Amino acid sequence: MSAENAPSTTQAERDARALYDVGHRISPGEIAIGVIIGRTSEFFDFFVYAIASVLVFPKLVFPHLDPVDGTLWSFAIFSLAFFARPVGTVLFTWIDRTYGRGAKLTNALFLLGGSTAAIAFLPGHATIGIGSALLLALFRMGQGVALGGSWDGLASLLAINAPEGKRGWYAMIPQLGAPLGLIVASLLFMFLIAALPAQDFLDWGWRYPFFVAFAINVVALFARLRIVVTPEYAALFEDKELEPAPLTETLRSEWRVIAVGAFAPLCSFALFHMVTVFPLSWVFLFTEETPARFLAIEAIAAVVGVFAIIASGYLADRVGRRTVLGVTAAAIAAFSGFAPQLLGAGEMGEAVFMILGFLLLGLAFGQSSGALSSNFDQRHRYTGSAFTSDLAWLFGAGFAPLVALWLSSAFGLIAAGAYLLSGAIGTLVALWLNRELAQTIG
Image 1: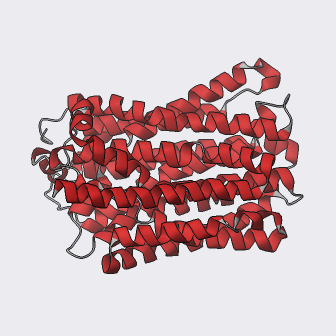
Image 2: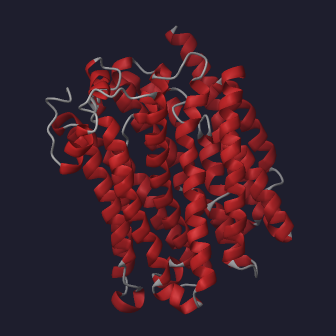
């Protein structure tokens, strides 16, 4: 579908396209900026919800349960978004094919922003009883559907425009959004916790970051639209390099690549939650440490993650992405044998756990996105990559906070390490299967 024929369903899309009517050519640098803004916005939403899942929802939505059970139920609702993401991919792929990518992205990001803003108005259990949990679940699923629909192909466009020998470097750029989003979310919550009395924070202070998330979504929407509605981007669709194919057709043709690709980043996605959401819950529930201090540690460790992601791009272009993923999976397996116990070793142990964890996370996560995308047939690369990403997040991250907290509270922190080890093993097996798959296809 060309840019001229694509329906302009929103004023935002028309304004974005007008910026490039003068024939301005998109550079890889501009694509990279759009990618970073978009991913930072999505992960800011993600971490705002994740932090509230630990600090707010157990008390607001499940005050009748003990703190551990309340947090487990909060994490169960947290997981719903990962189940909803594939639904969003199916729905918004249809919108993409029928009404155009501008309409798809606009509707997806407004659904994401609307669901996020709705959480800011959530009444507690004291007001509407179980209805509070049901509304939270509904809004969380809305976020998940929107995240599945917000796949814009910009990361694929960035990879296509990457200079020879720089694919690893350009592959890591979208991943920078995760630590950047965490840094902003952690610092915002840290400020609110430090500035407000505890009751004021629980009554209304926690709602403010959800309003901020909506505002950031509007900025991110325009930053991404100004690229995806351009003639150059449309030309890539016409060449079938980034064309959304029917999901059923993609599954029939590419099911083996999708299956292997969903497990290739398992260790990095499992570690992702093991050093972000889970440790905050453990420290908050089982230590006397204030949340504000640990959020500061988390923000500092995320800075280490930024540099580790950048380093992953440098290494991948010299030794190969598969090698980087394999070595980091082995390192994460070793890390799982001792690191979680550091959370029970006092403030210094927590800091060491977070910094080491983010160092490994950055190296693995930096190359985890689309690790097998080149194995897709060109026609199915766009849809296949989106659906594979949904499944990878579902299997690798969707249950991580829930399972890790349940295991550690029942059997000790060493059990959480065993969960992380299973993710590392999953990645190593997937990388081996990918080699066998490549030989079979070749």
